[in-house]
Image (cartoon, rainbow over all chains, first blue to last red; front, top):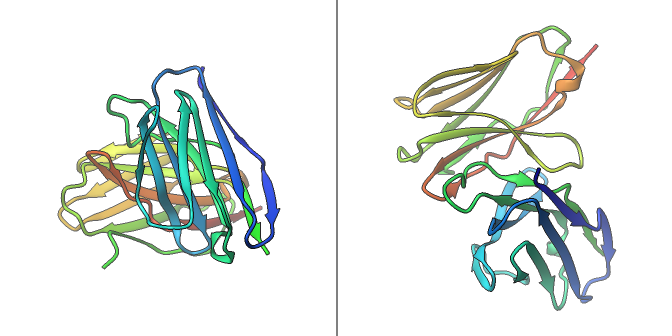
Length: 114
Length: 109
């Protein structure tokens, strides 16, 4: 069966510090991978998605970047965090061929930038 | 106009009540209509979905879509405290999945 791992669960970072969140998927090959951010009252906002190694599409211009160094690894980064980067970050995967509506989410990272 | 509108709640009901959760959407191209359930501080999980118009039933849950009015509903029968969560509707078409803001449901014993 497929599983998705996301860590850390919570993170408190000062403004201006770097960020690295990691997500890995097991039990499937060549998944589509996604990073979402969830802010209170604003729903899920798609930040990045990837259909393959090194292939990243950005949905929202921002202070963040994503990378996919391996087939089942997705990393969200920032060089300098802003207060507005606070939120609940979710990694998700879907099957590569069709099934883009069926997302499987990780447990999320609550990021607080102070 | 937002592509998907959903009442944020919270909706508080007694155990055993019938719950109705609703969304409206603006893009008539949407073909799949998903419902995700999210417990506090957890990632969303797919609850059920329908394709095009009509109803779909899964145990105590019924999803309904009316494409003519662009209206999506999720009904929960015999609600339980374990149903307390945020429910997100998410219409989909060709790689475009749009989440509503979610409705927070509280079922009290």
